[in-house]
Length: 111
Length: 113
Image 1: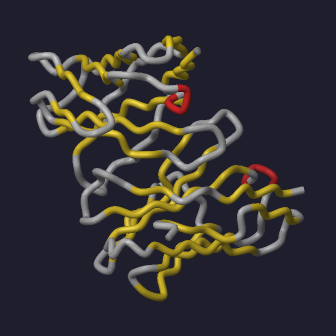
Image 2 (image 1 turned 30 degrees about the horizontal axis):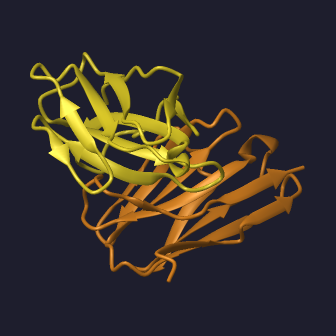
């Protein structure tokens, strides 16, 4: 599985967009970009995933650069409940692989 | 209704004991997983399982074994518990034999003394 690099922490004002970057320069052609988050003491929660096209769902948008070496998760209107650790994971969409969540980015949404 | 549930939520036991953690999902998914999150918050997959195959992370000691009585359940058995087994264990499930869109349980905090 490709290695990812995320900033350890970020702050965002409530109601503003939160843009969380992820670098994955060694991504392979068959590997997807996944985003999960973990709110304190809870199980991880799936947010979104994509291969090469930008994706949007009710929770967030995923912007993947054309060379696929980096991506950005966008929470359009952050709320206090979005405070969590956000994990960017790059891997093939199969059950093979070690599938380790990295260090993630701790997003703190402030009033 | 809870989609993925685990019992117990907390488990405190002594070294050398054998214990089990239960996991149930009511989503109709055919693949289930076990993850371990250590004290550094590093989340690592241990097993993925459907009715066709078990994929084991080779770094997992053979003291850990998943048992699936049916498609909705994947229990984790741990023999001869060690101090280093202390962690939070998460169960998860997904719709197909692919990794996307997993639903996680609330976790079981295991403390080995």
